[in-house]
Image (cartoon, rainbow, N blue to C red; front, side, top):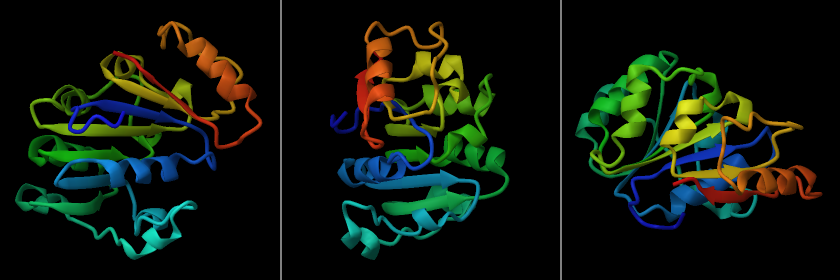
Amino acid sequence: MSEPRSNAVILIVGTRDVGKTTFIKELIMSANFPKKLVVDEFDSRVWQNMKTFNHPEWESIKIPRILPNQLQYWQSGLYRAYDSDIEMLQREVVGKVENTFVVMEDATRYFDMVLTKDQKRLVLNTKQNNCDLVLAFHSIADIPPRLVKYSNYLTLMKTDEDVYDKNKITHPQFRAMFERVKHSKDRHYSETIKLK
């Protein structure tokens, strides 16, 4: 996953307190893009700076807010965009964000099983817009099936699920990966597979 500017769609799946935020922040820090954007519904404290358990010194890296109507004028840097009207925010991101590493924090809250037109454009236009897109989910069950088909990578952390829909993720290595992650004694254990 360290390929610069791969225009990838990356799914990160894990329940609370398994290291999703730390993993995503490390992806952001290694991303080779002039612009990096974290999208959320509200002003989350964990996204006000880049601090992680492994990198407490990153607390000095602040993540200021950018308003949705400013996205078209934004040239570089790390920002977060949040608004309770997540559909409007997604439209703004789809229409105005290019050359960017985009993180859709807690996508579980605003991605339903059927993708909206804007969500489909967001995912399918990563190459045209030169963006990498990271989508964080709490469980495998929360991921829309179509989204799995459109994604390049899936990082699995503990999900507290005993089983998953084998028709949703058909990758031949996923079942063994699921079992390894599920049975690992390490709460923060994860594995990544390339879906396509």
